[in-house]
Length: 316
View 1 (cartoon, one colour):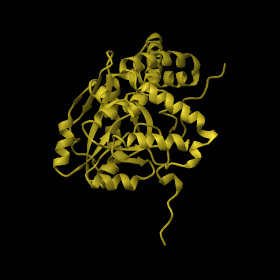
View 2 (cartoon, rainbow, N blue to C red):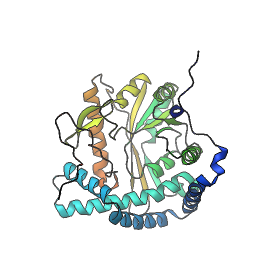
View 3 (cartoon, rainbow, N blue to C red):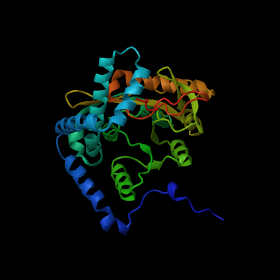
View 4 (tube, one colour):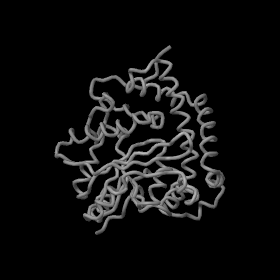
């Protein structure tokens, strides 16, 4: 007897209840985002920077997390240098809110005029060999808008966490699938592997802390970080090549996208060596533009046995 899929494995669908009063605030927010998306990109960046400056003062918990991460990862910075970088990180988060609106509902023609891409031939070479591509990136604040820009040159599937608001989850997937390939819920790893085996390009970001259960502790900026070994395992099961996907925002409102040659001797068969290698490559991406990385995430929340919690508040 065939099992009924669990709800968390199913893509979001439209419900008539979305028209009820409960969801009116969500519709209002979506309407604002769609309107924002029609503004010029440079205006969105300017507004996002203002939002970031506001967030810097009203989200002390995220500011503290970013400061902790940067203190650990860039010990060479002075206190003043680190505080300036924290401010730039929060401003970049504010910009990313507006960029995400543009990524989801912006005009394709406008996006085409604001980016350049390097290394697209590496994806095409893999496809000519009949290989799928695991497009490995990290949580830079530019990931949504640069993903939309890359989609103008190459369709790719994305892994995503389903939003707890079912209307927002439905609208996000509907928008993304309008210009991308398939949206794959993170728990649907079998589908990810099948798509790679079928020659798809799939975007994957292994740089967040998903807990100890499915992770290996490997150095990230010299700090032991719980890291999922999915990159190597998916590449092996999907018989896919691994290509790094990095992206940055320039001060003039232009974006650059960089795709690396396919990694050689990967996977190696040694999970620790493989996750360490991926962490080192992600470090290199971040170091080019550290203010645009999502340092407000608690990257080091899981600790090896015996180590103290890194993000505990200091007692006054």
